Length: 561
Image (tube, rainbow, N blue to C red; front, side, top):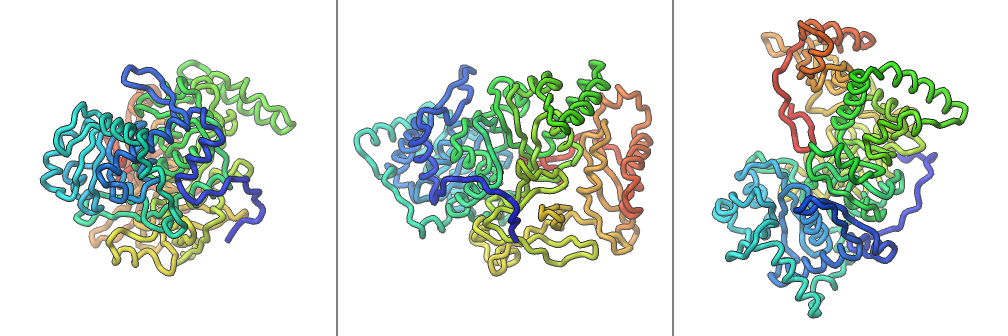
């Protein structure tokens, strides 16, 4: 199904990743493609022209060791070097394998072996693993360290390796730069992403170049990015690797590389971007910090009044948001126009608030197996209660629909993976006749925007047969000012039936102290009861557990249930 009311953006069609860079160089070659801090903590810029040259140099170096058609792995913190490896291999005849930087040594070895990787690029913190990887992953022939100063056997210096490629390229070696991908080539494996490294059989999602360029092209057809972004989320995750990086490159955006999660606000002020990709947890932090600061400085009532006044003025065509909320905008660098979130449900309250102060907050939905984008809210049709309209290249159907009207979301189209690497059994379990079962439950609203209610694996089935999506109730509870994190789970009786709901909460201790709360558990019971009063009885929380520590999380800040 497609929404016929949407006016799609005009976007230059591309068939390969190389075309993205070549078009950018032709149209905006002297514009900064990237800005980042160097070793001296100085901000440096790399133009589109310079960046394409650097990928040619690195690709030429790979050609000298006969690795341009092999599986190449990369692990490390977000960095310009990481991106250069990523874009170089995407232009080659090989396959890029981004590895989660939070994996243990054994898990890294597991992924290297499973993926058939023959080269490993790595940042300095992984140097201590190399000897063990050599022993346990014998298929890896070269280890190229971003911080290595010298070459030792097959353990190479990235700096030296890149310089070697530059010399060869300038001498006329065009082995890499002359690589051309035919239409048939674009349907071959290009990006191999592991959604887990923790089991004996890690799950490798196979994405083709066609998948990636389709995600880029159709994402830009339905949504708008601007001129400068702050790149925050981990690059091994497809949300940032595709939606953050590749989409930005095709739009000729300047990508500013965030050096630390602790420095996000500082870097917003430093680089002054006009948009940013985040997960909802970040938006929650921004939202709560704004209100906490307003309360501490005695400006909470004033902020509430200005929001009401601003919204009234907007109804008669007067927009004073940049003036009324100037201090908030300055905290975000002064230019921030849009925050795009994905990866988890978003509380509608956040969308309304950011819209009220003049920063658009749009939610989208995706999954690694769909490259990763499936749907996104647009500038003209933005409803925070939904994850937006489905990409024009996708079809959606719902299976196993519940009496409440929610079904398992199945996706078909140009962004759907070709399968799991060397894993026919798990591929056939989720991919049937081109339809990928996301195992997420949802429905369409009357405007044909997709609503996500929760994950199939997280559904709590009560003894009365009612299905409960914990994510829905968690979003209510997150509205309590002193709640930092929450997981809703089932309460089981003696025979294992789930008979009720428990909220496990990690509170903000500073906020609790500030509010003068002495009995946290009782306060939570009372406030949860108030905030969920309109929910059906079977969705009410009957028990509360207070945590002393944060929940364990993935590298994209999702709680591990």
